[in-house]
Image 1 (cartoon, helix red, strand yellow):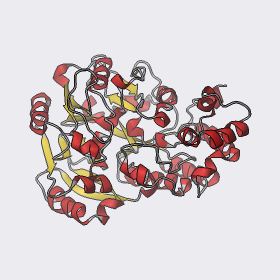
Image 2 (cartoon, rainbow, N blue to C red; image 1 turned 180 degrees about the vertical axis):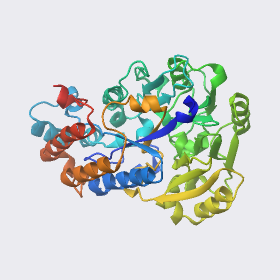
Image 3 (spheres, rainbow, N blue to C red; image 1 turned 135 degrees about the vertical axis):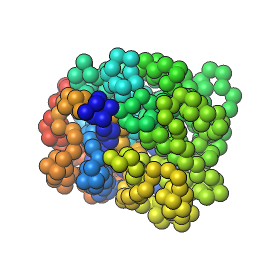
Image 4 (cartoon, rainbow, N blue to C red; image 1 turned 90 degrees about the vertical axis):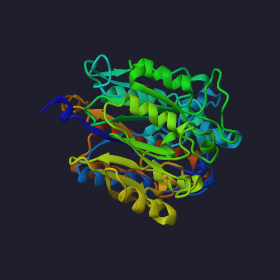
Length: 449
């Protein structure tokens, strides 16, 4: 069996954290803003995520797991001048700066599409898999993530002969980076050379076209820097600007308006500022014919695309070359979107021949669909064998993680509960046990002293 035939795409889903709540922190994320203040159910959210992972495992896909971040981030509060015991720090933050408290309690790391950008070994000049954690500097609650993300990735992908880790880009507006949510690799097969589509919202130096209502979270300069870090050449890369009107409609990442897999690019007609140029460049740089699947605005409006998260679906390759589209339940509830799936996608001239509907409502209410919940890593059999820890899902690990959630998670969490010091203690206990279950060692600040 050749190296290319050995390569499988592993979807590493983020576990929904114990402090999952609806604080409305993400400006430009319509779902997050509209559900601010609602009572969340962290236990249900974590179990919904695990159920999605298990269903894909049962369908024959390779499924991985990434742990949540340590929250509340008491270290961040102390760095901002809140002193005393954990109880005193939380009480004072709740009284004086409730929005900051909400930010340091965010469970947003569940959306591992933002964890970083990955280049598989087949595309890298040194033959290693490359990782760069996203700096997520555009929002404070996500800016807190990259340091722990880097430790987690380094703990799992530890073999230096097979994996290369780069530092997050400078956390400045010029190099604003939101990770794989704005990066798509297109290829004939996961083990064949690919073309890397980097989508940005603005140019830090010299750009003229920008959204007017909501901020653009990815810069061209950040995307170019990551390509350089990973050793990607101009012949392997396409840089395309996201349509500013889409960003202003609530499409805060490219993966809310487009998804690619193998040679297929499923996208809304308003995804790119220059649609034809983007397609032409991809055709020029791909080693296999591009299969574009275009959804016109007459079929699905921008508002419906954002509400249903049709394009934030997972597009997965099956052994026979066909593809499965994993959509959130909201797609089935939207008449125009569901008709488009049946008439345009399933009946069209493309490899998509199956749609799986998954309930991830706890995540969706904060603006994260199936594709947000996973980081895609193409790995050869040898690279999968080189993973450290116990992070590839099987029936036994699924059972242990489900039982772990049942033991440690609350089934009700309101924003005012975030100041509860008992919640902080519960979370540390849960995360300490989780690192033992996953076998990844000490990755959290409280474990490192």
